[in-house]
Length: 484
Image (tube, rainbow, N blue to C red):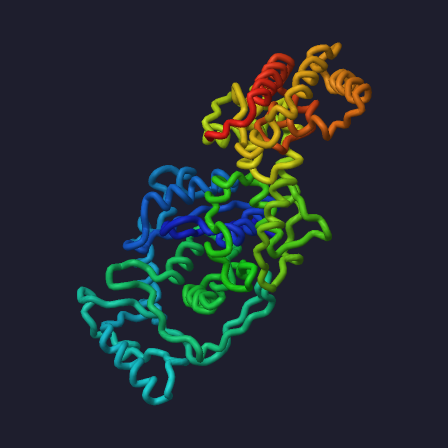
């Protein structure tokens, strides 16, 4: 069996939807596993909706996810024929082939004739279902090619088109349900199905992976392959990704753009992991590295039923990937999110690297991780107003000052020495950690939730710990700022 050639053919009309990426991802994994080729093709024939910005979004999204391609824009060079708008002569050439072989014809019927035929069908049947336009030009060749026309395919009215879908299994479509569909518009732009067939045929695509909303396009495309004397590719139609309410996934359910997840602090490999698992399984395993996905993916375990988006599960997957990432890589990824908070640090910052082991168990996204690291990296912490008013008050002044002395007297500044020094004082005074924990935590971090006190101290280091305890005790002595 030859190595597969798979393609991803998005339209540059806006953001890149995670549902579209999922279908492409299955093909990408298969091509990677089998040593095949993954082709990127930009279907930019919708002149009114296409934008250069949307093209860049496609590139940026694919780059961020790490879904590299072997052929297509930026790989084959600036003149590579992977934008449909640069292939119009090729579509005309194949349309002419179909006309010459009697499988297509030039149709000069205008919109008015089409509307009249549709109205007549509705009056005759009482509904629009089953309407098939019978063009008066189907068997005529006396039209003037220089006049405005479309090119239509001569669909057979008998027989059945059948194929074995890798996901859906055997699918059969009665040709009687097909009509003479349009191949080329009057302006020479191809309709979706025709452009796909010409492109996939000339690019040698052997496997088409896409959402099952495209099943309706497959029978007409197979008819075109047959008319051109070519073998159709294998098809794999993935079920749609649905929202929690069972309806089509949309922005009302969650972020649906790939780059939104980047901006929300998700890791690219976690996004790939979650999207693959929306329809594919490998036993009970939930968390996969990218290499594991490439190694283990198979079509036998792709489900034929729709998958439902689960935000909590997505966050869980992302949290697991955060915890698995080496701290040096994690620091590099969190630095931009710290910058958004006004904190400029290098990715090899010693304090950041020291804090990460204590912060990752509590974070699900890079945004949460940056928020958790905030007070470690500022000269002074930003106090939560409620926390300061409750815990930096005269009641805790003496405890904070004694804690300051005990920390200062610790033999060395490590977890064991700090704990021994402070516990000796607590036992002697009949106190417990809960008597000092929150005031100390607020003094050190500005907030009521943080890793363990001694862990925070060790990350801050001796000088900053003492400085913050000293400042916290002074604030406690003066009482809360009631004017704030």
